[in-house]
Length: 68
Image (cartoon, rainbow, N blue to C red):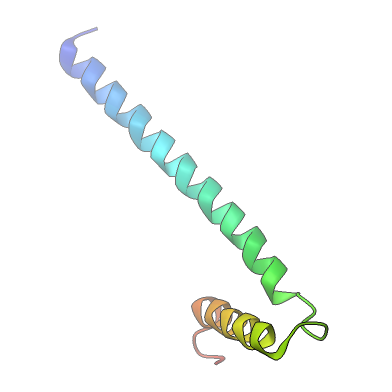
């Protein structure tokens, strides 16, 4: 295998690894955001309720920009 071919293959593998890492990050982000969206705020302090309401609004705005 020529040096250029090895470099191209290494670059393609690196690109694939970055893509998989991005997908993994987004997957875990979605899990955490789902926890926040479905969180019961009724037992929290008012400050905590406000914080999580703000977070829920941010999440909704990102996924449903026209709904907010």
